[in-house]
Length: 202
Image 1 (cartoon, rainbow, N blue to C red):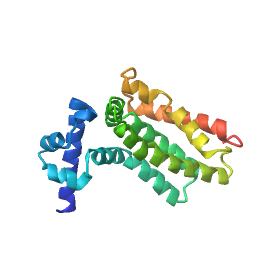
Image 2: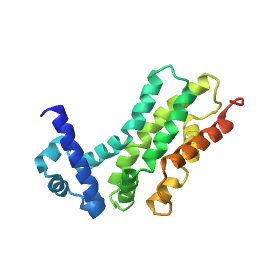
Image 3: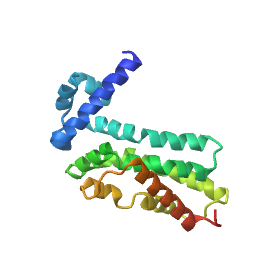
Image 4: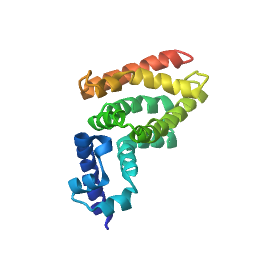
């Protein structure tokens, strides 16, 4: 199958997976139901994703792909690490409060097996967190930041950026954020993180 045809079919399958997830929850989102919604064969889904957990891991990975790529490209470049961090904030926050991320997290909260939550953690924070850590460590080596434990510094940044916003979106207590609100919150988080972690005024 040509790459563009496969990509188009995968997009339809993944859109169907979100639709079935919304309608039936993670427990009821069978591979057969998703295949029927996507007008694809059950065999195709199993060949491409192995199983339901593999399919939803692919959804989580696709959701985080832009942020992961931004960090990886930044780390391969000679950009100042604080510039990478500043650029990251709006992208990461937009990802975490996006409708698809909220849908996945709502489904994970209702999934008694814990499989979807584990997939979100593995392909989300556990994949992106170490990359943020590398950016912060580079900034520390260059004298731009001061902290003792990388994991704690990453946690501080994420707490400032996201706080309880995502969970409030998940439970329906916070309306969707527009681009201006996302940019404003990301900039505030960046400024506060620098004030708490910088060796000198930036």
